[in-house]
Each structure stands twice: as structure tokens, then as C-alpha cells.
Amino acid sequence: MWPLCGGMLLLMHALVLVSAQFPRVCVTPEGLRSAQCCPSPFALENDPCGASTGRGQCVDVSADARAHGPQYPYDGRDDRERWPLRFFTRACRCNGNFSGFDCGRCRHGLTGDACELRVPVVRRNVMQLSAEERRAFVNALDQAKRAPHPDLVIATRRYPEIFGPDNSTVQFENISIYNLFVWSHYYSVSKTFLGPGQDSFGGVDFSHEGPGFVTWHRYHLLQLERDMQDMLGDPSFALPYWNFAIGGSVCDVCTDDLMGARSTFDTNGISSNSIFSLWRVVCESVEEYDTLGTICNSEIQSPVLSP
Image 1 (cartoon, rainbow, N blue to C red):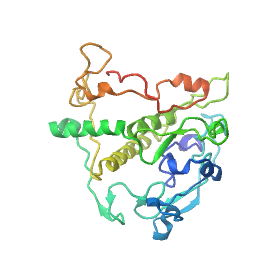
Image 2: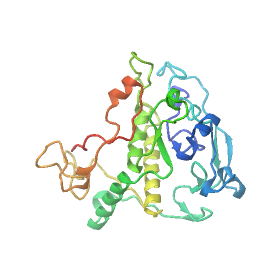
Image 3: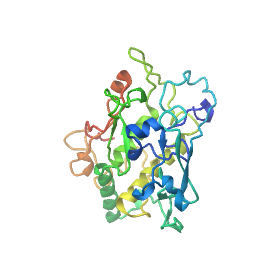
Image 4: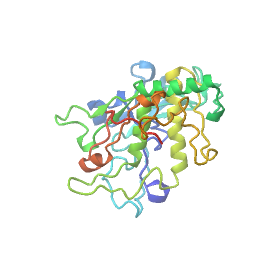
């Protein structure tokens, strides 16, 4: 459970080898049964991890094998333990400036065929963006909310049920770029299902209650930023930051040109003048997931509430 708690590694922050969750190309029945995720980049054939051009190689995944600490008194009960070995024991390890589940991308801040060109990515104070820049940022978020992720899918069942009732229909779903960002955070904090009729174990919040808090959330935001860069075709796109300490008790980003003002008709809702009033949340039925042992799917639910 982080260095403090033993060997559990969180989704998305587990290994250099596996910097994504579930690549669509790897979650076929054959791929899961082989426990290998070493696809060829750029739709090539028989070139795992781009090995022929030196981009990477398919290797055995090495996960922390130390015993869990006392904060997590179980072993082998949660798919996230020693991630990603429950699903994949072999994956791509990328060389140099190459990255991605198939080594087909460049490391953050680099571009070019050989990933040799540095791209400045400047994260600015959101309150200092011009009106045009604010519109562009909000529109990009809305596009990410609607655009299916081109490469990744989400699991909707735990591994014991991942092949479905017929043992051949894998339980994964497509999801939008932004909703994947939400789902990943949900998955990192979800409780450990111990079985029907038993309370799920929530004694450890793996991405908040430990030394990985800052680095995990940093990586989480970097992945959203990278996905939005790819979506926009702009490797210099940067998520702005918000200094929430400046506004005091006033939410200074809660305006219709940023994150949405409070509705004048519904004190819990967002102003209809904001594009976010049309958004719907995912991963809302947390108690149901914990009780039934299911995992949040891509179903949209209630409107976003005003802060």
C-alpha cells in the first residue's frame, strides 16, 4: 500500500511499463488470457512495442512483492494489488523519449517522429486568461467530456467476472476522455470488495492517505493534459491552474465564462448560461458499487452540482 503500506500499486501510477489503464487493443479474451499487453504501434503488424525501430520492448512486469502493511489486512482480494499483475504480466517498456502503452507516443513535452523536439507547455493562472483563452479552455473541456477516448476503455467488473457470464464477453466499456479522468480517480479510492453480505473494506484511501497523494494527483492531471493535447492536435496545450487560496470564501472561478455560476432558479444547480449545466456526472452510485461488487461504468447520471 504505497511505500508506507506495502505492495499495492495504484492504477495509472504503477509502473513505467504500464502508464495507462486498459488499452482497448489488449482487453480481448485472447489478450487477457495471455496476460500480455505488448501491441504494435501505428497499426503495424508483428512489431510489439515498436521493437524493430528501437521504440521499446515487451518485458515481464515487475511489481512490488513486499507484504502489505497493517493498514491493509488482506492479500489477493483486490485487483489493484501489485498492479497490473492481475490483468497483465508482460507489457511494453519504452526506450528513451518514447512512451505509451505501445511506445507509440512521446514523453510529455516532446514531439516529432523521433520524439526529439521539445515543446513548451506553460500552465498559467486561470484567472489571468483572456476572454478568448477562457472560451478555448472551456470548449476544450467540453469536447473532452464528449469525445470517446481513442485508446483506453474501463473495466465494469472485477477480474473474477471480467470474462462475463459466457466466459467470452469481456466486461469493458468505452468512455469519454474526461469521464476516464473521473473514473480513474474513483477507481483509485474505491473500497475493496470482500464478498456478498460483507462490508467492503475502505480503511485505506489509496490515492489520498499516503505519501503518494501529491505525485499521484500530479500524474493524474498530466494524463488528462496529454489526452487533451492529442484530442486537440496541439502538443503545447496546457491545463491552467487555479490558486484557490486567493479567493477566500468566494469561488472566483464560479462564473459562466469559467466553471459556471450558481443557477438563479436552483441553488444546487449551475447557471444555464454555462456549458457545464449540460454536463452529467459518472461514478455517482458509490454505495451500490461497494455493496454489489460492481465497478463504475460509463453511464451518465445526475447533473453537476454547483459548489
